[in-house]
Amino acid sequence: MKKHVAIFDIDGTLTLDPAFPVDNCMGAVVNPAAPPFVNALSKEWEIVYLTGRWEKERECTERWLKENNFPKGELDVAKGVGR
Image 1: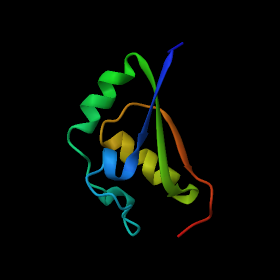
Image 2: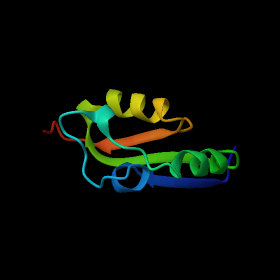
Image 3: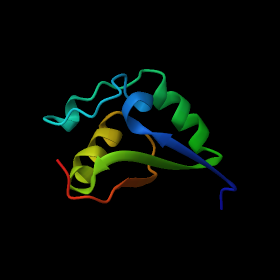
Image 4: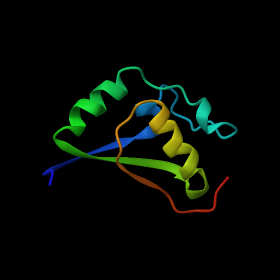
């Protein structure tokens, strides 16, 4: 069991744009430094992704993380029904 937890905000941290692209989740531009850093950390730390994106955007957000080579981790999204 990993002893440390690293929590990452998505929009404006893992992406270059601080605003969620409401009309196209997959259109978020990845911060090129983020995937290698998070992957290196995931060897020793548990990874948690935290976002203000809505629950209905969970599937797209999970796909975006995978397609941009982020390691698996818990995804905590806003609980509202949203946009």
